[in-house]
Image (cartoon, rainbow, N blue to C red; front, side):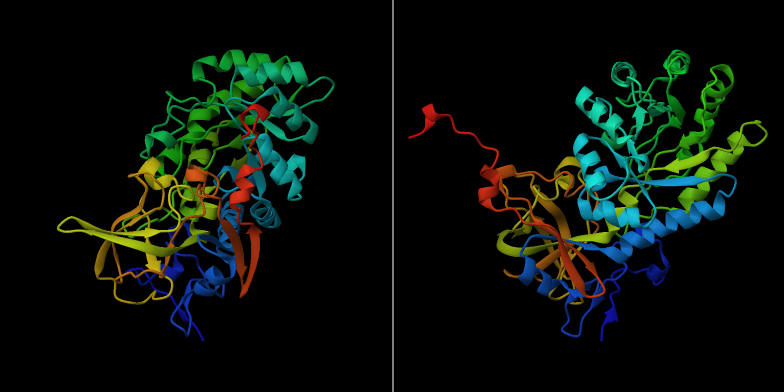
Length: 454
């Protein structure tokens, strides 16, 4: 027998969308008083697979995928839709295969992400290839796979012209829409001062260039950033693109059929966060598209979106083992865990905040203010600053919520720490999806010249 884990002051938490949950949908407390995810006792998972450990809940991932699909089908019946998983959030075989089972396409930004999607069983015609500096080797590989190439700049266009040969590549054109949004400056991509996309002033020349090629130029793309809570910016995307969409079709004869509005919906990391639901985000995008297209005479486009964080972020937790403690009288108490910035670089990079609990005592009263530090030789390696927890002790299992997005994908080998393992949990079954590296694995790419050997 388990009981539903309630970690929010909001009594309607269980009715929220996945991106509004701090903890995975299946989070429960076992009869032993331990945190369970996907029907698996987290304390047992750590004993079996080691620590630190990413724990990914299959139910939460599928629920988010299904909410995007269902919301678009209900709110945008005028034309087809496509949901792409922005795999930069977490690219591995299991994640790509999982979202593909739910009917999602894949958005990739490197040869490595392309390869991962293909090896996970995703066909090339269900992959879109992004990136602001695609190499010739990457473009050549993308052409071989038959993916949709999202041309970001003149470098892409020239590369495609040189490499396409007799192929007729499927191409989208990325436009910088000039839309500001409230998020961290490092993850804003839609404002004019951005490395991504063609400047609007370039578009006439871009459209003319594309029209002279024997390419299948299918539409326009824009993206305004990540971890966004405001909806107005998403309502404005279609309005920013409609004039270029019309010119592409009517002035240059391009066969535009798709409008890609990107992604960027935020998730709930702490109690203070209040993101819109997936359905509210879709409604905002569709409302903006309707306003821009209604009466335009243009055929309704296939509506494409690219969520990443909101699909995978809330579905994962990271479990650590508590080690040392240090109290600075009158200042703070530090507890250290066996991971840190190498498995979650977001706090030191973006000053990101998270929620946490002790998996072996999840319902104990949280009355001790502590700062959770990582084990790296870096003063800034702090995962959580001044958070309330039950008085932690060495050996406790600390679990940090909402770690599915950009944690594994941005992980490093800082201080030569091996990358940690990941398991997929569902209905009491736990499957390893990423093996834990060993110290010996760190030497696989090393080369020692003979003249340096002792």
